Amino acid sequence: MHSKIDKSFYGYFFIAPFFIGFAVVGLAPILYTFYLSLTKWDGFSDPVYVGAANYTRLLHDSFFYQTIGSTLVIWVMSIVPQLILALALALILNERFVKGKHFFRAIFYFPHIVTPVTLGVLFSLMFDWQTGSINKMLESIGLIHDPINWFNNPWWSRIIVASVICWQYFGFNMIVFIAGLQSISSEVYEAAAVDGATKGTIIRKITLPLLRPVFLFTFITSVIGGLQLFDAPLMLGDGPGNSTRTMIMYLYETAFKNFDYSYGSAIAYGIFIVVMFFTAITARASRLKD
Image 1 (cartoon, one colour):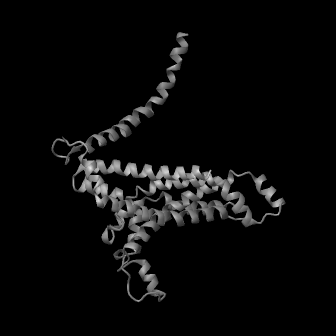
Image 2 (tube, rainbow, N blue to C red; image 1 turned 90 degrees about the horizontal axis):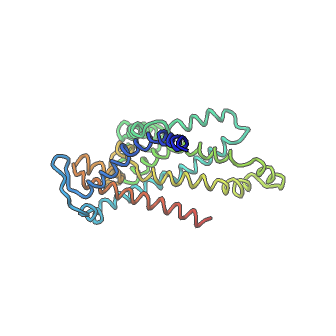
Image 3 (cartoon, helix red, strand yellow; image 1 turned 120 degrees about the vertical axis):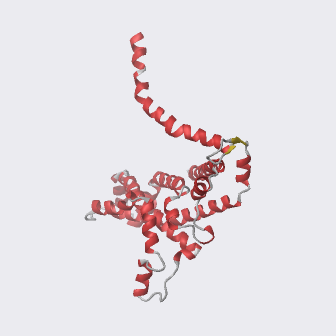
């Protein structure tokens, strides 16, 4: 009996590194951030406890609500074409008659491994109104006569940021959709073909309904990631009227530029609540559909 009890503790030694690492790298900063959100601290003097004053300030911060709106607009503008393009390419590259499908999968996935900062710099150079390749190309084919200052328009600025996000993640979602398509039994398609179902009917009546769990996964992950946009918008600039300033950019500027770490900590928890709220809505909508 004693030897059995001793052996049962071996498992704890194997899982201990994860929990120790999570406690040090994850849980401790989270708890310390919450402590800072209850204080007033500029990073130089000692923290002064102020209670819920930072959260009261956050609730009345109209600029924070503006960043929520900007983040949501950019996310919607990126996720719709992203999922459509990913699904269309997945349907095409999952066909048996397509030659070189593995090559094209790798090519379409490649933008996902490029860092967002690199993509932000790349797109900012492409859409530069003086020397950008986009203006040069449009002028060469006669569509425009004068260079367009893309980043001087709030909606064009949002479209460019959304394009960066879409281009970076459509390949990843394409791979996820392909995995979902390959998990569907071929017997289902064979039975539908025997019954005389057309290709379009098979996609609408069989493929898309069976891909609903995959859609839910991609949608929830896109909500969590899309509401934390930072790298690419930072490289592309705020845009006129702060039209492309996201919640994380506001957090970064408050804490690390204005040295208001206590209010920045409150913003971090506010962002956490916003992300969890929209994630819960997505999960709830899926259950209601079921």
